[in-house]
Image (cartoon, rainbow, N blue to C red; front, top):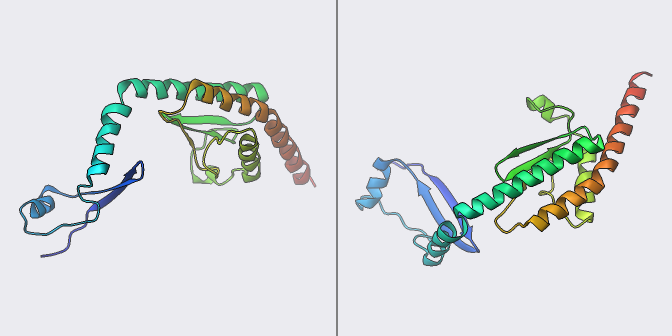
Length: 187
Protein backbone atom coordinates (compact mmCIF):
# COMPACT_ATOMS: atom_id res chain seq x y z
CA UNK A 1 0.00 0.00 0.00
CA UNK A 2 1.39 3.37 -0.98
CA UNK A 3 1.69 6.31 1.33
CA UNK A 4 -0.79 9.14 1.01
CA UNK A 5 -0.51 12.76 1.85
CA UNK A 6 -3.06 14.59 3.89
CA UNK A 7 -3.19 18.11 5.17
CA UNK A 8 -2.63 18.09 8.93
CA UNK A 9 -4.37 20.73 11.00
CA UNK A 10 -3.41 21.33 14.61
CA UNK A 11 -5.38 23.67 16.82
CA UNK A 12 -5.51 24.40 20.50
CA UNK A 13 -8.70 25.49 22.24
CA UNK A 14 -7.72 27.19 25.46
CA UNK A 15 -4.52 25.14 25.63
CA UNK A 16 -6.18 21.80 24.90
CA UNK A 17 -4.58 20.28 21.77
CA UNK A 18 -6.54 18.92 18.85
CA UNK A 19 -5.28 17.29 15.68
CA UNK A 20 -7.15 16.73 12.44
CA UNK A 21 -6.39 16.03 8.82
CA UNK A 22 -8.28 15.88 5.58
CA UNK A 23 -7.93 13.74 2.49
CA UNK A 24 -10.04 12.35 -0.33
CA UNK A 25 -12.93 10.00 0.42
CA UNK A 26 -10.94 7.10 -1.09
CA UNK A 27 -8.07 7.68 1.31
CA UNK A 28 -10.31 8.23 4.34
CA UNK A 29 -12.27 5.06 3.51
CA UNK A 30 -9.05 3.07 3.92
CA UNK A 31 -8.94 4.24 7.53
CA UNK A 32 -12.66 3.84 8.27
CA UNK A 33 -12.65 0.32 6.78
CA UNK A 34 -9.65 -0.58 8.96
CA UNK A 35 -7.43 -1.32 5.95
CA UNK A 36 -4.94 1.27 7.13
CA UNK A 37 -4.37 2.04 10.81
CA UNK A 38 -4.35 5.62 11.96
CA UNK A 39 -3.54 6.58 15.52
CA UNK A 40 -2.36 9.74 17.16
CA UNK A 41 -1.81 11.50 20.44
CA UNK A 42 -4.60 14.01 19.88
CA UNK A 43 -7.23 11.70 18.40
CA UNK A 44 -10.62 12.21 20.02
CA UNK A 45 -9.26 14.37 22.81
CA UNK A 46 -12.52 14.84 24.73
CA UNK A 47 -11.50 18.12 26.31
CA UNK A 48 -10.49 19.60 22.96
CA UNK A 49 -13.68 18.40 21.30
CA UNK A 50 -15.82 19.88 24.09
CA UNK A 51 -13.93 23.18 23.89
CA UNK A 52 -14.33 23.28 20.12
CA UNK A 53 -18.04 22.57 20.25
CA UNK A 54 -18.55 25.16 23.00
CA UNK A 55 -16.64 27.71 20.91
CA UNK A 56 -18.86 27.13 17.89
CA UNK A 57 -22.13 26.87 19.81
CA UNK A 58 -21.74 29.47 22.55
CA UNK A 59 -18.98 31.91 21.60
CA UNK A 60 -19.01 32.33 17.82
CA UNK A 61 -22.69 33.15 17.55
CA UNK A 62 -24.45 35.46 15.10
CA UNK A 63 -24.58 38.07 17.84
CA UNK A 64 -20.83 37.97 18.49
CA UNK A 65 -20.10 38.11 14.76
CA UNK A 66 -22.31 41.21 14.54
CA UNK A 67 -20.47 42.67 17.56
CA UNK A 68 -16.96 42.17 16.12
CA UNK A 69 -18.11 43.42 12.70
CA UNK A 70 -19.38 46.64 14.32
CA UNK A 71 -16.11 47.10 16.23
CA UNK A 72 -14.03 46.42 13.12
CA UNK A 73 -15.94 49.02 11.12
CA UNK A 74 -15.55 51.55 13.94
CA UNK A 75 -11.78 50.99 14.11
CA UNK A 76 -11.31 51.07 10.34
CA UNK A 77 -13.40 54.21 9.83
CA UNK A 78 -11.74 55.86 12.82
CA UNK A 79 -8.31 55.21 11.36
CA UNK A 80 -9.40 56.59 7.98
CA UNK A 81 -10.67 59.81 9.56
CA UNK A 82 -7.48 60.26 11.58
CA UNK A 83 -5.28 59.60 8.53
CA UNK A 84 -7.17 62.25 6.55
CA UNK A 85 -7.12 64.76 9.42
CA UNK A 86 -3.41 64.33 10.18
CA UNK A 87 -2.18 64.54 6.59
CA UNK A 88 -0.46 61.18 6.92
CA UNK A 89 0.20 59.59 3.54
CA UNK A 90 -1.36 56.23 4.29
CA UNK A 91 -4.47 54.16 3.88
CA UNK A 92 -6.29 51.50 5.84
CA UNK A 93 -6.86 48.05 4.38
CA UNK A 94 -9.41 45.83 6.07
CA UNK A 95 -11.21 42.56 5.55
CA UNK A 96 -13.69 41.32 8.11
CA UNK A 97 -12.15 41.60 11.55
CA UNK A 98 -8.62 42.17 10.24
CA UNK A 99 -7.09 45.44 9.17
CA UNK A 100 -3.85 47.34 8.87
CA UNK A 101 -2.46 50.83 8.55
CA UNK A 102 -0.56 50.90 5.29
CA UNK A 103 2.08 53.61 5.31
CA UNK A 104 1.97 54.19 1.56
CA UNK A 105 0.54 57.15 -0.35
CA UNK A 106 -1.42 54.85 -2.71
CA UNK A 107 -2.84 51.35 -2.67
CA UNK A 108 -0.30 48.56 -3.02
CA UNK A 109 -0.76 46.74 -6.31
CA UNK A 110 2.21 44.38 -6.55
CA UNK A 111 5.29 43.04 -4.83
CA UNK A 112 7.49 45.93 -5.94
CA UNK A 113 5.12 48.39 -4.25
CA UNK A 114 5.23 46.26 -1.12
CA UNK A 115 9.02 46.36 -0.89
CA UNK A 116 9.12 50.17 -0.62
CA UNK A 117 7.71 50.30 2.92
CA UNK A 118 9.37 52.78 5.22
CA UNK A 119 10.15 50.28 7.97
CA UNK A 120 11.54 52.96 10.28
CA UNK A 121 8.30 54.93 10.07
CA UNK A 122 6.33 51.75 10.76
CA UNK A 123 8.50 51.08 13.82
CA UNK A 124 7.75 54.60 15.06
CA UNK A 125 4.03 53.84 14.70
CA UNK A 126 4.27 50.49 16.47
CA UNK A 127 6.36 51.65 19.42
CA UNK A 128 4.37 54.86 19.81
CA UNK A 129 1.14 52.84 20.02
CA UNK A 130 2.66 50.35 22.49
CA UNK A 131 3.95 53.24 24.63
CA UNK A 132 0.33 54.42 24.84
CA UNK A 133 -0.85 51.01 26.02
CA UNK A 134 -2.16 49.74 22.68
CA UNK A 135 -0.77 46.71 20.88
CA UNK A 136 -2.22 47.66 17.51
CA UNK A 137 -0.97 44.53 15.75
CA UNK A 138 1.80 41.94 16.10
CA UNK A 139 5.28 43.35 15.64
CA UNK A 140 6.16 43.73 12.01
CA UNK A 141 4.91 45.88 9.19
CA UNK A 142 3.23 43.09 7.22
CA UNK A 143 0.99 42.01 10.09
CA UNK A 144 -2.54 43.21 10.82
CA UNK A 145 -4.87 43.81 13.73
CA UNK A 146 -7.59 41.34 14.58
CA UNK A 147 -10.78 42.17 16.47
CA UNK A 148 -11.84 39.35 18.79
CA UNK A 149 -15.08 38.58 20.60
CA UNK A 150 -13.41 39.82 23.78
CA UNK A 151 -12.83 43.35 22.48
CA UNK A 152 -15.14 46.13 23.62
CA UNK A 153 -16.12 49.59 22.41
CA UNK A 154 -13.80 50.96 25.12
CA UNK A 155 -10.90 49.01 23.58
CA UNK A 156 -11.59 50.53 20.18
CA UNK A 157 -11.92 54.02 21.69
CA UNK A 158 -8.55 53.61 23.47
CA UNK A 159 -6.95 52.36 20.23
CA UNK A 160 -8.29 55.30 18.23
CA UNK A 161 -7.28 57.83 20.91
CA UNK A 162 -3.73 56.48 20.84
CA UNK A 163 -3.59 56.63 17.05
CA UNK A 164 -4.99 60.17 17.04
CA UNK A 165 -2.12 61.14 19.33
CA UNK A 166 0.50 59.33 17.20
CA UNK A 167 -0.63 60.21 13.65
CA UNK A 168 0.51 63.89 13.54
CA UNK A 169 4.06 62.90 14.53
CA UNK A 170 4.09 60.18 11.89
CA UNK A 171 2.87 62.67 9.27
CA UNK A 172 5.59 65.13 10.29
CA UNK A 173 8.31 62.45 10.12
CA UNK A 174 6.96 61.26 6.78
CA UNK A 175 7.01 64.82 5.39
CA UNK A 176 10.56 65.43 6.66
CA UNK A 177 11.78 62.19 5.07
CA UNK A 178 10.12 63.11 1.79
CA UNK A 179 11.73 66.56 1.80
CA UNK A 180 15.13 65.06 2.61
CA UNK A 181 14.79 62.55 -0.24
CA UNK A 182 13.91 65.29 -2.73
CA UNK A 183 16.78 67.47 -1.48
CA UNK A 184 19.37 64.68 -1.77
CA UNK A 185 18.10 63.70 -5.22
CA UNK A 186 18.74 67.22 -6.51
CA UNK A 187 22.47 67.19 -5.61
